Length: 122
Image (tube, rainbow, N blue to C red):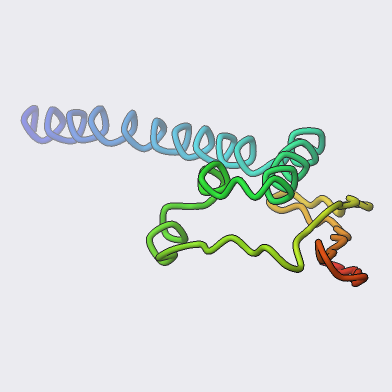
């Protein structure tokens, strides 16, 4: 009888602390995910602004720093586009959610030697 009580108590001592720590760890993981998923509006605006400035300069080596590893591996070579080329941009309003941000961007393109101008909305 003493053995049976001892075995039951040992099982309870082992099982209960491990169950309670799992729920605390899961709560901490969920809190960390929410913190990571939030997008800072100012940083997102700065990110898109810097990216578009590199596009205007045609600095494709620095642009690759903004791409994910999967995208970098799929791109073989980026050929610079001389005409028409982007000459200006305008960042309009942005929509922010928990895990994503969307901006309305207007890019102005022009030829160097021709009287041509176009506007693209993204």
